[in-house]
Image (cartoon, rainbow, N blue to C red; front, side, top):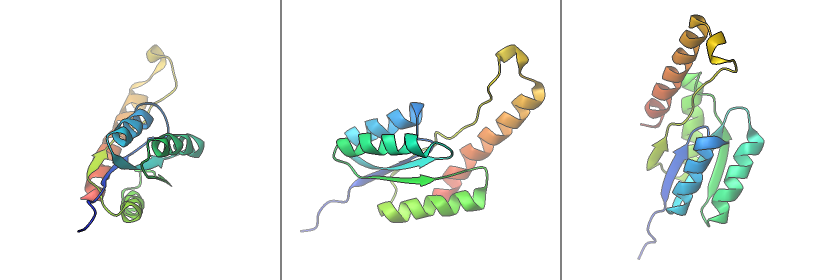
Length: 127
């Protein structure tokens, strides 16, 4: 008899905030977790430790979805490490640090463009 395959989820930008909590909640539901980070490796390691405390496996990797071909390669490396993917939580985004009334239309345009590229690149990369 073969052992049942473990469920696997990848949560982009799971180094902090909503992504980190999503990773923890999925681990509590029995998922092994792929954790990605762009600039906060320490945060990704904290998330990984919390996932592992649930008894689930955690793998971390740096990912920047602003570069679609490279982002796709990185996601495939993570899928290969974990053996499969069942769930993708596409949490990666972008923001700017300014008071709302100080944000220009150009800031909004750039941020929207980055967020949309990242929202589209991850699902395309893992299909």
